[in-house]
Length: 445
Image (cartoon, rainbow, N blue to C red; front, top):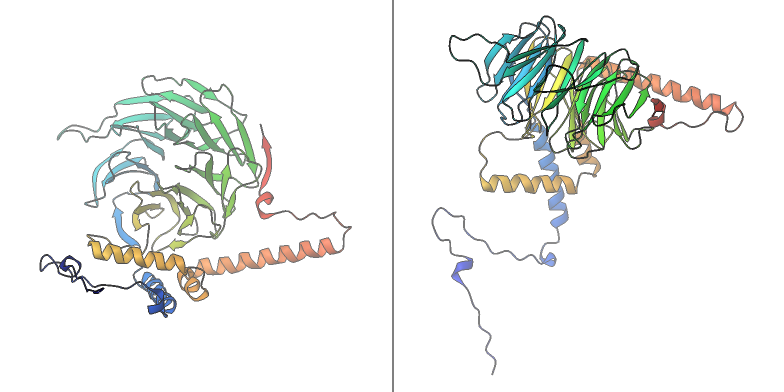
């Protein structure tokens, strides 16, 4: 004779202490949950709406500079340290945790053109309009001591930018030529030139550390290898590129900020066409910086806004702006992937959250699990029209909105004109040119 017994283990429903939550048994049989889909959709909709309600990206404002902020330098070891340079030659070192300026000193006559930390973070380098490269200690001097550079290197050429190698003690400067330096010597190890008047920005590849790239005044982007005697190749665009940033995870890819309101992501193996054209800015893009994950980057523009893009999408996922913020000149993404810094003409440095609705402070495990669940729901229903509309919608300043409308009208007119010319021409005489190929003129090897 068979006897069926109900067996209950107290470990499944009795809590060990009063501080724990009550354990609730759950049957996951889908037949018992016929409304699971609609219920999840409503939760995803509410999560998307709450995301927009709690989107308060502005964290703090760091004021102290007496002229516009020109450049940033991120400390490779300390998340709470940021170096900034201004138009009047002043350099400030900020303690971001306490939101205070730890040090300030005049480093150069004229603009500070670039700041770069050494790979161990013990020293940092500044270049300015006075043709000098100055080396400074990261540690503040003792009380009563003057701020003096550890070393001052006089260059033969005007200097416009500096970048430090991530794995060795070499650094590179750009100006009339691209010069490779060693920390131990006062003369460049190597000078690379490709018949260009001025190189105004330079950047080492963080993965393939012997490769570096420059943006030049003749609208070109030039690639160098410091092991070679000559530059590798260059690509010429329709307008000048202001800044260049390498993807820290995809060694071949880099993004340039261009004067024509767009950003272009290139693959170094195929420079003839960009991988992606990133739209949405309505004025010249001044700076670009990648997140340490390599999945996103942030850009600043003369249209007084900061935009965040997914690396493989054409349109921005977020836009940051304030009424007081003027032309944004420089931008940086913190190495913990949580904050963005922007420096603008009106002498202020602003600190933003990389994720506008992220909660700052301590998050309990159940709260963290709930946030993860909401993120998963938002990803699952992201393509639904209602959720997509709420997630995408942003209020932009009036001048940006008007400029966007004007640009849209101009583009539509050009498209109509091209269609009319094609209609009244011989077949094949007016070819279709993709948006990617329009902006690249030629590639030189």
